[in-house]
View (cartoon, each protein chain N blue to C red):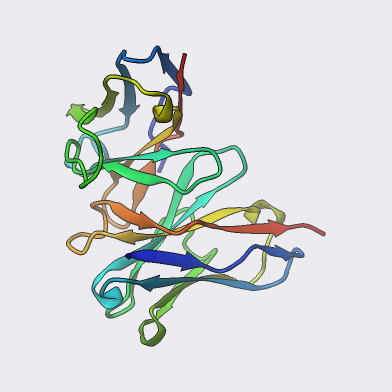
Length: 110
Length: 121
């Protein structure tokens, strides 16, 4: 199973919005609504920020939102803040006995 | 506090065996899944597999099937990831993470801090 496709980098100024795409196939992203997103700061463990395409766990700011269209899921970070600078990884159920991650996107706050 | 505590860093030689651990606390360990995720240096996350602690039902990624073994000892709230013969390409950070109580593929909401495994001759 190939990894999901994410852009390697994205950037925005404080207060702006940045959207990260995560492209898969009808066998993973497009097949069900089990897409999740994880934020990872350097040297730290990943943190769940979005699950089931667009649901936020308790404690995650509503600046983070998720969506999906066809085989592509997206994460939008609105009102960028310095602490949002991190790597973001998408993940999708890929059927049978598999979960698949994207390659990760490094978000830089300019 | 809900947490997963992983065992310490390991340095091994090619061909050696290894078992790393992940101990849960602060929640009902036996009613959740525990997954393992690999992150090679400078790379993205890779899902390896997952185990339901209650009955040890296990699922493996096709990429890792036969390469590693995932197990658990519910009496001590601990999950394990083991190798019988390490390779240099197993050098990576390994995270354990708690899966959703409903479906193993929903999400992973609590993560350990990771165990660094270095394999070098």
